[in-house]
Image (tube, rainbow, N blue to C red; front, side, top):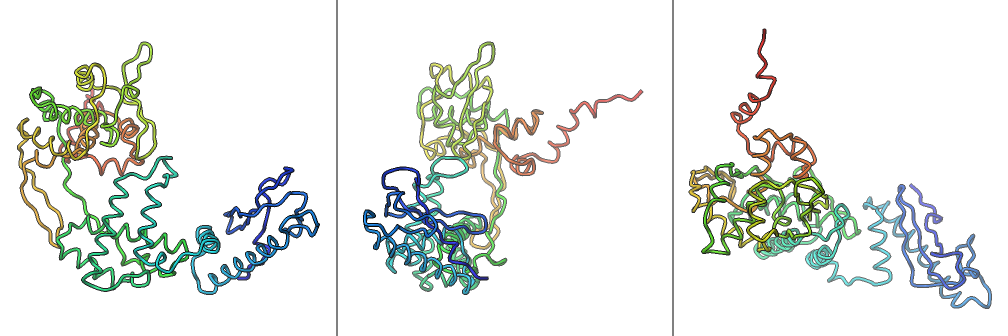
Length: 426
């Protein structure tokens, strides 16, 4: 495949203005368009559009140095692209942009090293806006990436020096075995593999490596379903009826949790509710209106009577925010006070071995239990799946049905209540 140098073009940002305007390098790749602003400017009347260079006129400032820069850039970019094609290195807008960034601000070999790259990537992620939601990448995602970096560092200290080129099938097998030796759960090991694939994907995108082993069929993101519980209506009501006035911290944790359990909001949303989230239209019920942090979607949720009662307790306002870990700590104690003591068999793969044990249900309650409880209880109560999904923001019915905790018997009981099964033949 031959690439004509004409694919690299130079244009003006504002060709019709009278004053100086920056010159842009433009490159088109498979329908995509890269526009890279240069730090040189020219007066539009001194620009030769056909030649894409500064005219040779006395009034044009720095014409020789600017044209020399443009000539060098055109040659260097074209040479970079041709080399990528010859070496079968993936080519993208990102890799060309990285090449140009390196051209103007060369990156040291240390900065290109495996762990330095990961550090820089995590730093950039912490200030990056998710294009889907328009919000910053969540702190949970950043913690996850940092955790993977630390796991890789520990693995390296007892195995071999890591680089972009050592991420192979052999590495994958060794890393999974090492995670098992550390008694990691299967999902924890899978999380690290998923994050490592992200690191390597970014490195390939930026042209730092052409090692594609991480995309092989054996480089699997390990994952297993965990026995996540939900609380039924009786259990939630028993929590609600507890008198916790002597322990304000527990009371607030309980009330925040119950708001989650009757709205379906994620903890990142229900612990941050303010009076601004409460809406009331003339002649209609009070509702919550929330723009969810994770998906950026706006949801409007009717208030369950229990939620309305909780708001009254706080003078018509949602309870003040509380750190997620504090809610997790307190809600287990509250579950025990509410006598949610059913023994649950919990099975998971840990250290490469499947283990199971019986655990009191109250010890399994976490903030996410609230959201799962809402979806499951609403479904069992006969609320239409699509109506629940409009609140939970699940994208497909299949993902929603995997999410809720409903037994075959409960499915059958719900179906039996449908008018179809109540039809009496003549």
